[in-house]
Length: 600
Image (tube, rainbow, N blue to C red; front, side, top):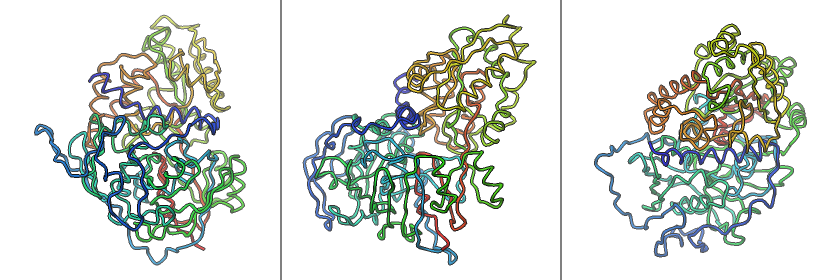
């Protein structure tokens, strides 16, 4: 596989890194940091809301769109698929809407809290989940979304249709989508509740892929958006990728309407008009977002509450107090907060959601002393006791992993396969004796200053390494230096810090673990690992890919490249009146709120 093939998959990681260094680092985005851009062609022309005739998007003679997107002519054009390429039909999922049982109540207001404020309302020009998933952005639909519900295993990235009715994989790089015929925009000016069509989807993706927009990396692997008819389009990708469709389900990939851009050329001040279950009624970037239910929403019976209110509470103690006093209905708790809460309310409901890729990562530089020798890397790992530290620092809410999103729980390694690689002082000392480094091996552990828990963890790791013969010291760097010099440029012997919030498995595996990966900062060269990474990247069979992924993780751990001694587990609880809270927060998903109902 060529480097050209490898390099495309780091687009999602680029977006994740931007999230990490701006949002997760605690830095508030500069309101002026994103300049205002006119929308990408096609030229905007007012549409008559009640008339489902073609818009200006297709009325003019088609011309190639700028950048990597090309829009096909409105007249369906036969697509030639090489005979050597098998045509694989994917499942055709349609969101299953069961009749609401009699015991379920309708109505009321669901109250949530967001930890961050928003800078503006333009969902294509902001990467913050405070906008896309916890703010005005939830008014929009996407072409696809993640499955949510009581039977959805977590963590997971299983896909289902949002505004599509079904999809077919025509070839490894081509997908055909049929849109639902009952999707309507919110009945607000200047859209007026008209029906959504293929032109809206193509327009939205063309706009998002503007290289000046921060969410464009998600869609840069798309090379063509082909209009076939008002409810059918084809999406072509540049190269085979088993994760291609995940970019369309990401919470940042919104479908917006051209009419809303006519007045100002952007959506920074609104109007926010979508096709989702929630209609934005009022918003204050520093205080709250208030939504009503979309009466013409295409999934009958949803949402189950009349209104949704999201309070902006940036202080953790304030969010906790709001939940304890009943101001909010759902709350994410820290491990220590949950333990205290459980003492006061022993029957409190809870949901634990593993978050692969969120937590603490450790990496070793393999091309310089002392970690160029595998035995030294193994000795360092054996000096650590991650299970004990998870108990001491996070109340046992966490696990050991390798740091990338997983499609399903069967991708995760069982604890039995991990235990032998850690917490063995005698074996660590023996390995160091074998390599002639029995004592005084100097090591600098570079840790990012992302909070006291990171610094405490680095100190604990250093103490463990000293106990087996390393002369280790902790070097603290600020967040931006960690991101730019350490994580991206590889300026470290051994590093400890957070990962970027990456959207897809391939978006992390190929650029970080492949020998030719753009962010392979450990410097390893491993043909066996490269072959496995390349195979899984294009494997659509779920069982075969899961087996490859487990082999890859064992190989990475056996060779001591990088791993996560602590992977976070989210803890959620809710008020007694809340029912059917079955979230999936991966890929910035948010559709689960439409399925919650309240017992008043």
